[in-house]
Length: 628
Image (cartoon, rainbow, N blue to C red; front, top):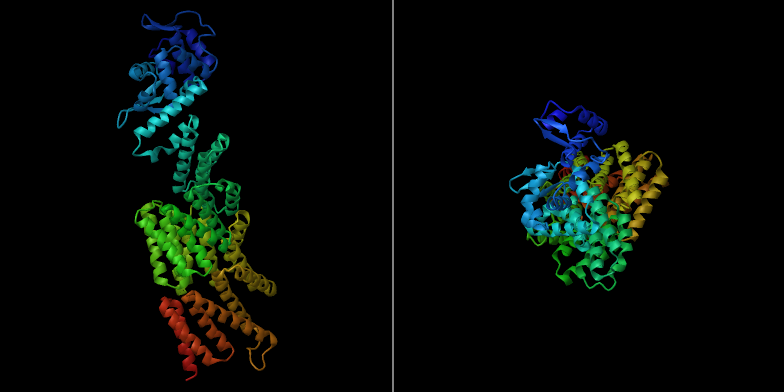
């Protein structure tokens, strides 16, 4: 290597011995030692060969690679050394245009770079589209950077950042991370926080949650160290937690998110900024929704909407409306849920907000509401739009919700096999912890409906563990309900029923009308199944046990029909009438069964619930034939 480096086959033996002893096989150290000896005049090219001009001194070459590089920098002219130091602040690779604008030797930058290239410390990396140079080795940059005083480094970082803002003003998005670094190492805390927030948001869009979390943690740490206690600092801290909240949200860590917001709630005191305050309440509402506290969520989101209207802030209104659709559904306010979804959707489509999340989440919320309303085709169409939007935007989260909407539409129809396929695909492609849990709950329902209790049980345990760890009761509480259902199926009847009815009662008290309705329907099914397992149907000679099961099932079906009619949940109302007809047949009441089947058919026709519609017609025809 030495022969190649010095372009000679004849080298002084003392030089070869010295290099072997000191470099110890490190090629970069070897090269820098040779260069340092040449710079120091200890090694010269004379009479067509390399010669040691004098006996080697320990001071000629320092014992460490850093020392070798430092000694080489000491041999540079004042101008070249300063240019190298400034370039080292810019990074391993640096642009000529930036260096020229920030250097104290801007008029002589070419001479400095020429000397550095001749010395082998930097080399040209690219000429187009912009002239770019690069340090030959990262250690050269490191030594150059450490040779500057801290205050000098801060000043150079600051100048670089400001120049980058000017040069790349039309594409700052590409440089958020670099700008955050330079301002952080420079003198502008507020600017550093600004770009750290944007770097975190940028990482979120490619599902890099760990990286995003780190940017927001850095931003908070900077503000906590700043300790200016100014309005500017408080506003920036609110910006940090309002944007950082997305990381907690996609991870499903709602307990930690609420704790974070509780800690910083004092920042709202005396705050005359409805936009920042409104986003704070919008996020609290979102977290409370995921914690199954729907009424509190509704109140927080309503507060956020009022602040958004006051400020004329379309972004705040978009987020508050897109999140409001889900708690509205759970509270039985399905028309309002759809209205909120459409408001958020419109704000995106009209270009008043730019975040694709607003659009796809609004569509997902609308699909969730339409599923419960029983509009199969509309739910399916929304799923298709979400999948197309996700593919066009390369947005996995939109595609997850698209598959969920397709699954929900198949549930309306009664096609459990296709529903299960859709939910499995949603789980498979999800890149976020929370966006995997959400479709798992629906997948469990599909598998339970298909009698796949073993695989459903495993998923239910996963959901409950996730909920316990992170505060995701939106999936955790129904998971406990279905877990008890499986326990009941395995023979633990009394305890299973007790747990299920306890949860339903809790939801009813909390105003969770939709969840109370859907799980109340399951309770009606449970009692109807228990009735069929008894020796005799209810009647004159019925056992007390069968009469109890019949009455409880009947009451649950009637309650479901009444609530479903109030809420406008057509599909579930149709299923309640269909199974109520089966219950009447068990009790040998064909006239009541006929009436129930006819009502279910009308509702299924309205919902386009193909499989259930076919089942209802077949049962009606069979009953007519048996009693003709």
